Length: 128
Image (tube, rainbow, N blue to C red; front, side, top):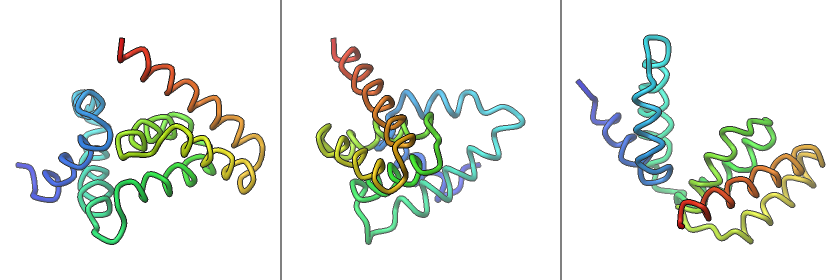
């Protein structure tokens, strides 16, 4: 049985990351990953992403910087999509990458630049 926090988390996760990603993540939750999906959905998405003092857009900005600093390219690309869904423009995301370059270093900035180019290209091809 799903908790109320899980339901809130799934709703927010779908809003930010899209149904296709969430459906795939949940479908691939095997014996090893199902507890992780539950944890992330309830606490990250249900609890933290639903707090009222920051907008989803603000959270996207924060996440891009933190995830780039941690050098987590897969998650960074996922959150670039989320940032677009949350109203950030491509130029704003580019400027976030410039900020990342100054504060996290050129390797993190260059990797982030490669990542946003890849995501933007994927998003453009999905529109065709």
